[in-house]
Length: 466
Picture 1 (tube, rainbow, N blue to C red):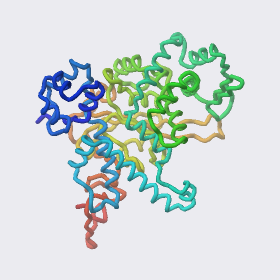
Picture 2 (cartoon, one colour):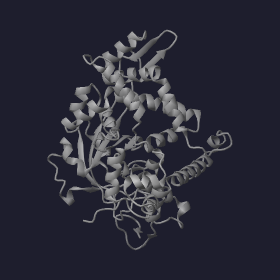
Picture 3 (cartoon, rainbow, N blue to C red):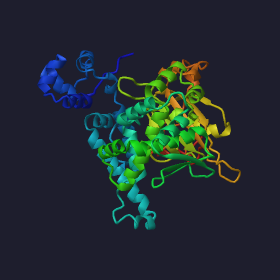
Picture 4 (cartoon, one colour):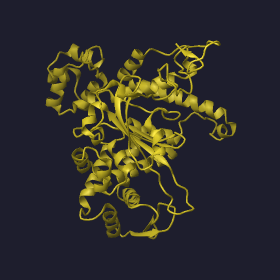
């Protein structure tokens, strides 16, 4: 099989500018000619193996960063946007999208922002009362979507917050559970922690210095909420500085993102990076063992696995998703090439939907996406009881997965035949952009393909996809 050429001009240029070097100086350090460097930076030539080695040896550069993670995300997002009927006669070929994502990522993101604004305008026009309440503009992204995209394009890894949480976990007592260690830290900081039979998970009164946690929640949730409050109290300057760099467009988005960053700190303190990565490798990513070792929930462990993307110490690249019973994606993070639909639900052929039928059990699936990439998918329900007979049960399912080339590092793959083509089930991202022609679960036709209808013939679908 031919080796895929590596075009990484944007990353190469970013490294040079970060080092404050001219093209001539950078070329000399890499041992290449100035014209050759210029061609590589403009993606007219691939990055050679010699240049990759020189970058690692000369600058300590993590060569895994050269992989087009952001470019893959941008291509997926642009394809979904261009599947909109407004582009029916003007959708560019896939090759052009890849060039745009690699050579002009800022332009690609601006296009996505413009399309998102267009979609939201159309949706708000369909609901006039909502449109009239948007200060007369109606084109800004919703705060929730803006924050979601911020974490999405950070690979769900925030290095300063992650390292601060790891440092905090080293400073607190290791002889105690995470909850007791957090409570001890708060009480040393003159904050009293009380437990109350209440549906509200956490409540902090700054005037009295009392943090109230729900007695109905499990200990993993109580620990997480205590750590969240510690983040708000002790890491406020770091969180605010990170928010400044995010350049969010509204105060609402900034407020939501601060919750997300405090949650990130809590998860990273509960499951500190290096200790958790080491345990994940030793247990071969056994979620139940990891949850027991760190006093965390299955969902917290799965989510944390998707964030292990620290340069120089990366874990297996996972995707993580949480869906509700209607199939709506409520959380999504991916360090893999698999990207989730920005609009609508998850593919019905994906096993995450079956988790609700088998509570308390892990389900496994070998799956292949339309681009030919194969994955090992793991899913389980994570229903959350309300703590009393009259309280509603919140029902969710989580999905965790990685490319099948990493399957040997997961205990869940031991008895699966990953070398058998027939073992892989076809899944997609969204029916609107899925290229499969014979899918029996297709809900709508693909918007990029012409349709033909024969009134005298009917197959699985009432139309043929060109």
